Length: 278
Image (cartoon, rainbow, N blue to C red; front, side, top):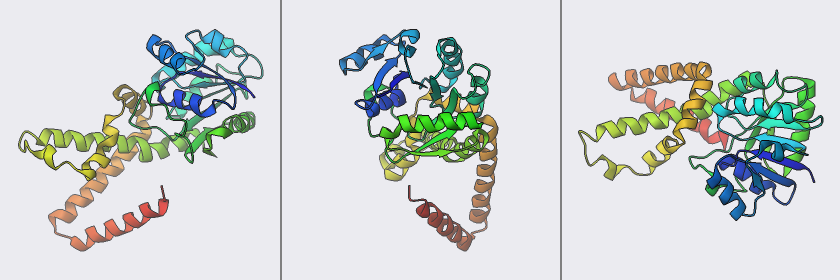
């Protein structure tokens, strides 16, 4: 049984804690008194003192919002003893890996990203089954980090996640298309509908399953969403350009009444999406 410190007890940190409970010796670190109170009510060991949390840890998982991760790294680095591993759960890896490089000795840190977020937030929504069957990306950039990643996988085996390795840049481009762009599109669809209510006040009455499913991500944490978009803006701009082109193709087909083109596109993309078996 290893000692694992979870820095940040929000949705992801709290879910990691509950999923690993009974498998490892755990402690959470959070500065929010309300979060600490809730954690202790749920029988979780928790403290606001980072030094106390890190003491004796075999693995430290930084699960704070993306924009705060570099600062936590700086606070954490002097406290890390030889043999302790550090990872994070940030959804953008390039900036995080670069922030960690000068602070931790070789083979101490390996970037991580569990692909298991929801529009929910906070410890109150922690789910021990959140990671089951989900992809958990690790982004080692050296053989030493790859070895650290193997140990992280061993320690996190109780999550029942599917671990994969990716280069940080490849990860960031991939999630720009599969995670961050969907967030922007969900927000855009909801924003357009919100504006349309000026002309069609009854619009919410016909907002059913399609609208609900398409716009679910628009209810995500706005601060986290903004941090993610800015941190991954270069890759996200590529995705936006691709979306702009695709919308222009829809516009051309509609203007010219190219029904066959629309049907063919819908069929081909629908088959590809079905084959993903998500």
